[in-house]
Length: 114
Image (cartoon, rainbow, N blue to C red; front, top):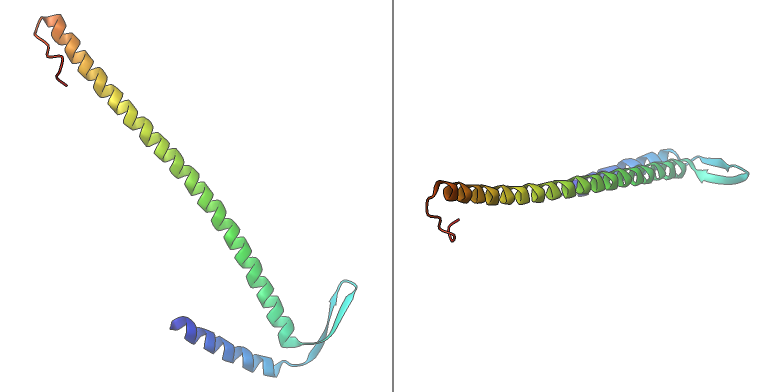
């Protein structure tokens, strides 16, 4: 609803601006001359061009940020997997160490125990 009201207000302001700036102007683009273009149309075109350029830059930065975050997330997942595997290995070595100590002291060892 807010967007609709904003668009209507912007449209009314631009319509008022356009009625006040109908003076025909000439636009030089290098060797090309475009004549009798209303002033408001030249302003609207440059505004639209600037908005499109800003949107392209924003999308480019967003994509770069997304790929950087994905790379970091991939490295984090990889590191977590490594930590999990090392934790399992430490646990296995602790169990093996306990069994070897029990054997060295002459206590009976249950091979099926954890």
